[in-house]
Length: 206
Image (cartoon, rainbow, N blue to C red; front, side, top):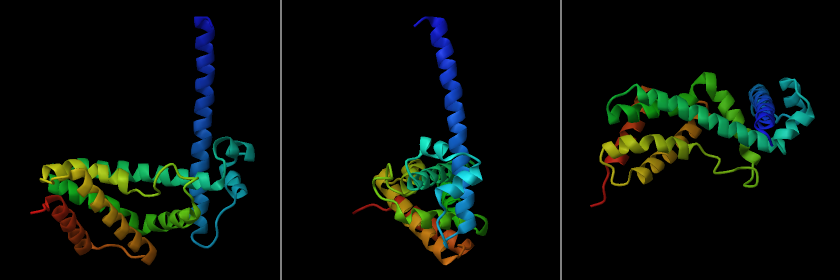
């Protein structure tokens, strides 16, 4: 293929890719909106989602083999957003102790009233997902744990990767409890959880 033909073909592919990316984003945002509106009372249909996105069934199935696949993508997208937010909160701090506290505050922010209902609804919809639908574990613990490795290492953890993952599992579990109970951790709860994470980072087997 000549250089001109190749360049034009690549340009056409880039336009199509950009258009498909926009379709996927519209489907993700619309599905999240419909899920949030329905809460934990009923699960939306594909028809509800494509109507909200103002797209066709063909557009939906071009990107997702099923509604469950879309819910799995919403989980992944939400995890990426939360991880980015928590990383930003941690970047404001200068000491490893403060970074760990920033991590705790960022993770537990999902229990706040303005985001808890939506998060709870997404998790409820994700309850029917199977291993065939998911590309990995349906948990935010792994990506969030990666943010703790560096401060844990600075605090002297003998195995920061292992300790950070354990701490992340524990705190994500605590977040889940708050979400399902409809409670918000207060300042005392944040400080207690932060102290737990700091102990996990400095604990050593003797």
